[in-house]
Length: 291
Length: 253
Image 1 (cartoon, chains in turn cyan, blue):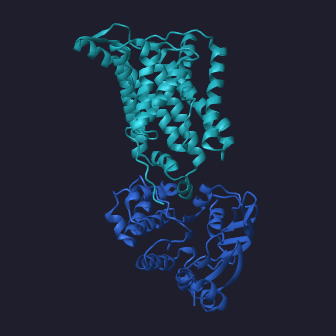
Image 2: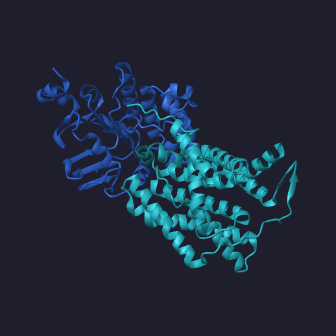
Image 3: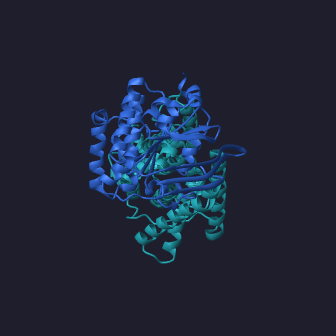
């Protein structure tokens, strides 16, 4: 039994790392604009599907992954430029609905380009299971974990150590003051969308060998990433990471100990409980504004 | 003309055109017209006060000057350039820096990070930023003491100092101050105004927008009186302080 639990934990952390990366993307855009970008899951799907297509076209795996990430980041940038920016001045809710529209559009384009089947992606370094204590894990899980650690550290360093990262945060803390110190808020928003899309794409590519990918793979991943972000306290990038890991582990434990049929239900019930007892998320800022 | 003397003493040629020249400016929020046909100018080196009561349009005027709010008619020229339609960041880059009403510091960031972001457009000039940060710390020693503290945890007066320091790190050729005395104890108001005078003496051109007419006119060279979006009077500050209408409406005696 303890071995089994250890196995669930290993699986859960792997899945959680993916959720964490998707949640991080949500947090970045939310930080720059207070908007929840519901096309975030589609970035994950686009990254995976583009990489699969490029690999099929004969590109080596590394190049296919890099090109897919850059292309997806470009899609994110274009989404901001062509759909979000023209609606500047619209309410946050309107903007969120635009992102939902964009998600449906991207899904449609993907189904036209690549059909409706689930497509495989080869593991980066074979499928020979690694035995770890009583648990086994796929080499790809290590890629996922390593990739997540690296990306989370880089994002953290970017936000906390660089002037550009702080400027991005400043846009959410106080948009008026951000403009008054000369930050070009438009450019910051494009940057946030580009980065989020790139992060999502890498998450999708890392996960594709385990989960496969299809045009609608982004729906569930997007929802889970969103859940990770709100569990962690939306707008708190490291909270989103913690939320993702927590969600992944809970899901795996629930699926293993209760029934795999309840996997998604467990995750969403958990989100509801968190919102019920701690509406600003487990690691969210307590909202206290001085009037 | 004390300002001219100072400029010439500093070896700068006297410019004929004002540093800031606002002509027939109108600004509105939807159907509500807030600024009507305002014309004003500020010469390099001057300290000009713009005085008005609540809702006179002071903040809207400053938001329009800084590019946060579009004007509906009129022109704004700065240092010879028409910047009426410029985006906010370009106006800051040109050297028009604002200390907004209510300080508006970046509350979750440290004092030092707030100052660094103030130098966002000057970040390439590391030496200058370092020097200027030292100067801000000399002007406001309390900020140096608290430089690692989060800006949101500072007192109102300290936040005002931080907002001013942040604007100074934008390398202002013209400093716009929006109600720096608001919500501060009289002693702190004195301290803030002392620094405003000091900055002006060092050569920073200042447009001071205030509800506290007495304090503002006491340190300014010239003043404008703003009422319901219109300039109703302009004169040297000493004359405004002695003006019967102004005394009755703004000075309370």
